Length: 344
Image 1 (tube, helix red, strand yellow):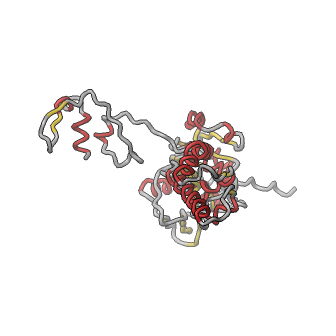
Image 2 (image 1 turned 90 degrees about the vertical axis):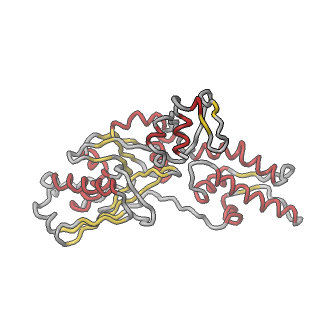
Image 3 (image 1 turned 60 degrees about the horizontal axis):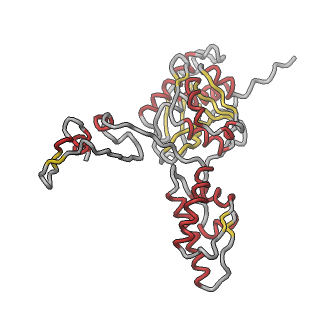
């Protein structure tokens, strides 16, 4: 298919495109082609070069609720013959369906869940039972079963060697804990959690930064040679990649070596260099929305990501603090619990 699209989209050839089945040349030069893809990665570079890419971010929770109220619920009510006695979906019920029964960028699965409830309502009418007039949060499991998705929440307490990274997925943003454990050994580094090549390199860069700052962090010179390090990202069945967890790994490593807890209400996303500079990353809107849903109070990002904040709804930014940083030292100052004052 890619080879055929290359010929179709090439302005030097598509004025006389010949189909292999019809074997008749016809002019496609005046045709406007619109293609869609869930992700850009599988699209060959040569084909992508012939396209103007327009990216659509995932819907935020409020947008999904509005779409459900205006379009999805009325359509399913009509299709299931409930127009005379339509069930009322409360806002809290819709929110629970979105959070606990769907995990997507769009609203396709949300409509399926609404349709399932409407089918149950139609069945009640067919059996001569009392009609379903109101769908509340407590009634949702009765119609849809137990929740299928449990979102990650902010840590309830500050912990040593555990930091929260913000991740982008095809279904939106999510929280990604980074765990670091130290053991007596010979300086080996173990990475688990099905990490991709780029993320493994980020872990190496984070460790090299911490080692280069050992004196400033008050660490003994030979501690790295006598310690084995294990970095783990939970949910090992899910592949993970990208450089955006670099500052989180550096924070968790610093916390583990200095025995200073990481604040549980802080999330972060950014690439780290060997010199400790913080580079920008993508998917910021989805990441900050995920942090807001999870109850994080502070998000740390690269200062070069500041223009991306224009895409974030204002009411989201009102409920959290976004800290813009340029250096890893600034990240540690925000993320690590302050040292207690020395005894007088």
